[in-house]
Length: 98
Image 1: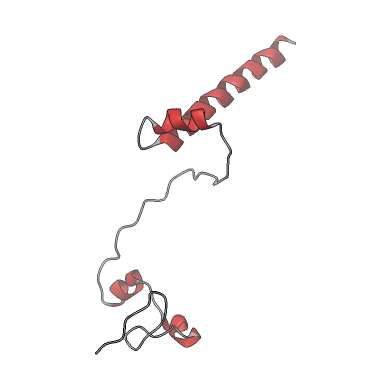
Image 2: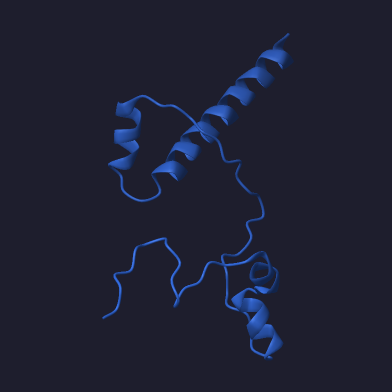
């Protein structure tokens, strides 16, 4: 009778990885290229990357943007971007006027 498997505990079918095993590990794309096959497509690199941050917002702000469905973080970024552009334009006009 087979013993009950416990998640996260190595057994004879899934031994614990050793440092040597990890050194020999290769990515799937490395194996595909080695066999003359094209690598799997990944997410295309963006021309301009975003900076990941942690940001605390009021619950009603988050709820408003999340109510719009997927892309809520992108919409928050767009609102902040428009604000920055408008504030920069206002500052430039004030500087020019003085």
